Image (cartoon, rainbow, N blue to C red; front, side):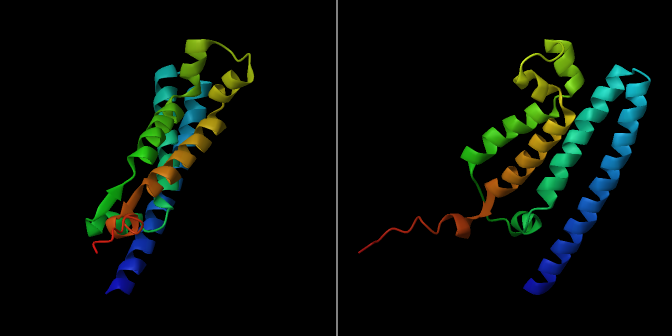
Length: 149
């Protein structure tokens, strides 16, 4: 039974990652169209969707994510989860919003905020780290043994 669960989990991961990649390709084409038409609101919306899809691809590509949520004995590392959620929110702010807020780049740190590639990389890293923040309770309590003698 456990072997079939792993096969089903792997198949579900592959299908969901493939669907997210197809969705990302579509969103990328839409981004190009709305950028050419100077439609700011739709460009910002599709930029947020693209960052979320990159996060989703990274999260879904991690091992055993589906098993953690179906077993019910999940342990969450909040010290890892909270900074990664902040990082994900930072990555989902489109570069157009950074330009409207801070202007065109000057120093190197402003140039990083304006790069959509950098925000997608940050979204992918936060997806991987958020997936690592969830573990089973048995795996997280290995070092928590206490001697009762």
